[in-house]
Amino acid sequence: MRLIIGVDPGKTGALAVIDLDTLALRAIEDMPVVDGRVTPALLADFARRTGWGEIHGVAVEFVRSSPQMGVTSAFSFGYAFGVAVGFFGAHWPLAEIVPTVWKPTYHLTGKGKEASRSAAISLWPGCASLFARVKYDGRAEAALIARHYAVSLRIPAATQ
Image (cartoon, rainbow, N blue to C red; front, top):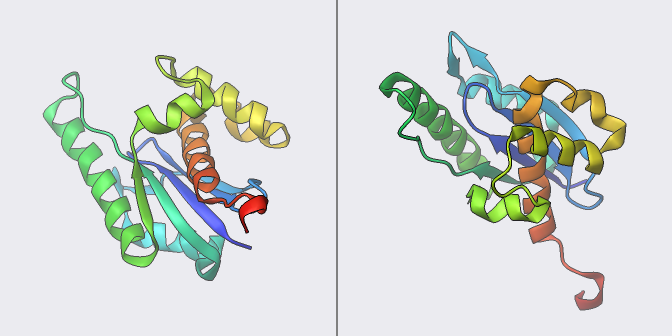
């Protein structure tokens, strides 16, 4: 099995694991946070439980702070992004994917977080409970990011 991890960074983000070959959702968790900060040790724990040797690559949403964020929020968000990129990039091929690249794949451009949850539920109806609550938008986006990256890595059978 070859796995792809998708990361929606930030304290309210999430981690999702997609099977590269089947696009099945294999695991999903909220971002591991201790004392208000994302921790590399818990990212490592997630990777070990997922199947360290089966991870084929990682896609992290590349986002920037917005003018609406306060200084503390912007720093915290940047810190979480940096920890995720640093940890995962040290161990596996890493892609930083901007929202303007992955969101059009699911017709989410200009739409809110609710649309991301709906898209995830439609792709993985058997896992709908994982996206059921409004606060699970980070899970939905992590899964969609992972799936977008997995699809971009797949080689059509006709060219093999």
